[in-house]
Length: 624
Image (tube, rainbow, N blue to C red; front, side, top):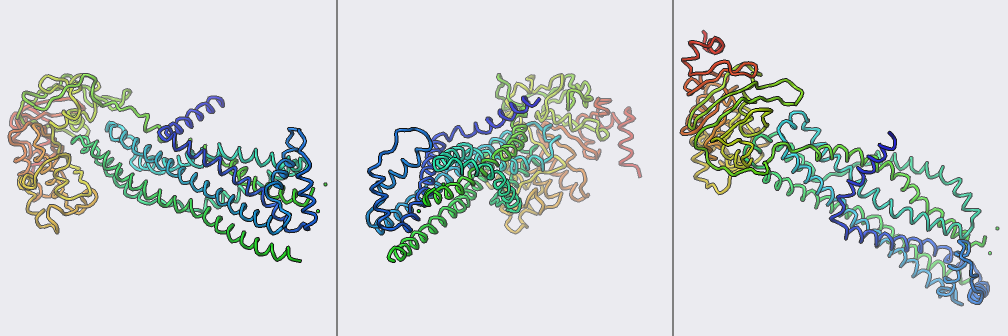
């Protein structure tokens, strides 16, 4: 079991890292900056000891040391302990002068340059890591969002909206750990540790052994302090509210998005928001990453100046040598940070794996409703809609919701569905635009199985008006024209007239350009419904689906909407679901559904005479 978990974790981490592939060149650049940072970081630490030695050695001692180093060849051994002597000889050759002030000047210049170059490469490495990190986050977030748009309605029925939003925002942000805090540290920190420990051993293996025995306790304490500070820090998220809003709106209105085949539009709108978020985060990352190297570089500049001028004042009046001991202490303290950092990598990876699992659960969700390989284009409806022995259940092992539905709707015919709540009315009409696919049987349009029609073409044949109106935080005009291109203002206004919405729209502060708020919260229920009807009128589809469009409205609003519906239904094929039987008395055919079956069918008068169930429903509504 442990091996299996480890293999699963490795595969998951490799999958996360696969998102780095488009940025191979950037990664090579990061690794180059990493290598150069390690070199100059090592040099900057190594040069501290000769500086102090220069200050406190006498002129004669320094001259003798230079002559000794220059005249004594380094032994031909290749052991680590010979490294220290070789490095010191090279340092004496290039920096030691007979005049200690001249030596001091050379050392100060070189120390400043080495620290400057170290921080220069550190900043560039951090900047490009931030760029890669934010690009990967944007790519993964866009991919996840685009995939969510293509998932069937059944997925949204079992997945909470807040859970989805959390995965697309918080969990993807947590993957920063894998890309930033872990990826580069796994490469750089081991190299730094090996180099520093090699230097420590070359100076004194005994002291190194002692330090390595005591060091883990110190490192653990530092790590605990760092974790505490991390828990208290606040994560800045600029522009993420806009991304969350678009995501929440689209998921809440996914039925309308799918009905109008607006997945590409919503995908593009979301990508624009994430691109704005990407740029904002990148600007902040640049400032954050720049602050440390900039402050350290300025601090070293001031220190070098103090060392130069203070050193001159000093000069105007040796188990280890003092120089080697100072060098050992400097290197020892410098190796603490990469060891502490490397110790946190496993925790960071585990956080990334947990978040990655939640994200990939979404990405691995199958898109079960899609175009068939041999799907055809169909842009007209000319004959009939037919349900042939349709069975449906939401899950393979669950009870059937529809049980052998047979139904034929001729062109321009008005067909209504009545029955108690849970009888299967809404499920029946939701199968027509393929919000769900039938479990068995067929649904045909003009003799063609709807599963063989391209999904976009199929949904363009239909207009849907539901009780729960889905509007977006946009202008009235854009909500009416949602999913449709190249419509003039005159056509939008004509649709509003036919939907009995024109008068209240013109009374709004900016008329058709008025922003209606998230989900149309600035409008009444009747106003929202009439805008929804105007949208369907503008789309001008040959097939209409009404799902209790006048339910839960006051009498005045119902009359206005009923009048708008009558305008919309002219010369169209209509499938209606209504609890208020007054709205369907003129239907060409009425089907009574109970427990997923059609129990009777006929006109209003026919059903009143022979259907006890229909008569009961009618009397419940119209009895005095």
